[in-house]
Length: 352
Image 1 (cartoon, helix red, strand yellow):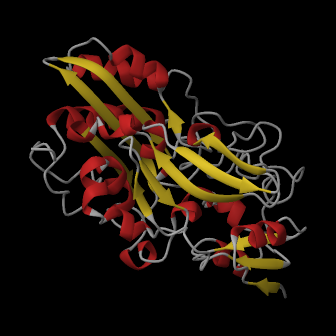
Image 2: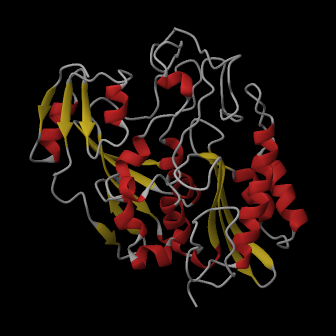
C-alpha cells in the first residue's frame, strides 16, 4: 500500500468535513476498499474511519410500516433480523447468498452499495481501464467478456455491478439518505449508480465528502412479502458473484397479478429495474407464457458486449424462474442454499 493518513471522526459532521478533502476515502469494514488498496487500484491519501459513528448501526421499523437501515448495519445482522426477514424476504435471501459468513459478519449496508466492479481488467493494473485511468481505454473490449454487461454498456466500459443486496433493494424502491456539506438529501437507489457512458470513472451520484447514512424501504415493499424471491446463478454455488441474478415480487388478486416488481443483477453497471416487464405482468395470469413475455420485455434492449450473448438467454430464464418461484410463495424458511437455482423449497408463504 501507499502511505496514507488515518482519522476517526466522532460525528457525521466531522466525517463529512474530513471526507471532502482531496484524496480522502471512507472506511467502514473495508472488505472491498482494503483489497483495492493492496492491489494499488485505489490509492487514497487519507482514510476516514466511520465504523464507530453513533446511530448508524440501527435497524428501525418506521411508523408508516417501512424500515430504515443504518449505513453501518452489518449484512448478517440485517439478514438474520427476524422481523426484517419476514417482511422483506427477498432482501434477506440476497444478503445470505453473497460472499461468505465471515464477510457478511463484517460488511456493511453502505459498503455493499459502494462496492466496485469485479471486472478482471479493472483489477489488473497492467490492463487499460477507463474506470481506473480515464481515457486509457478498455482492454475488456475485444478481451474476455464472458461475465460482462449486456445492458447499458458503452464502448468505454462493459463492467457490471457485483452486488446481490442492491438488486431487491432497487426492485422494491429503496431510498438512500445522504448527508454532505450542503445538508441531507435523498436519492432513489435506482438512480444512485451511474451507467458508464463517456465517463465510467463516475460510479455514483455522490458528491465529494457526501456520506450515506441510511437506506429506507417503503411500506409498500412489505406488501410483497408473501410472494418475493431472489435468484442467483453463479459459477459455483457458494462464495461467488452472480453471472446473472433477479429479484421478483408479485401481489396476486385471485389468479391475476395485481402488481409486480422485477430487477436484474450482474447484467449492467447498476442493478437493472425492468419496469416495462412489470407493466406487462399486471392484470395477466401467472403462467409460464406470461413470464416469458416479461423476460423478453426485460431483455429487449440487451446486446452482447463481446463473447457473452449467452447471458441474455440465461437472464431470460432466470426472470422466468424467479417469477415462478415468487408466485409459488415465499418459503417459510429460506433454502439451505439461499438464492440458488438448484435449491428446492415448498411454496409456503412466510406470512402464514
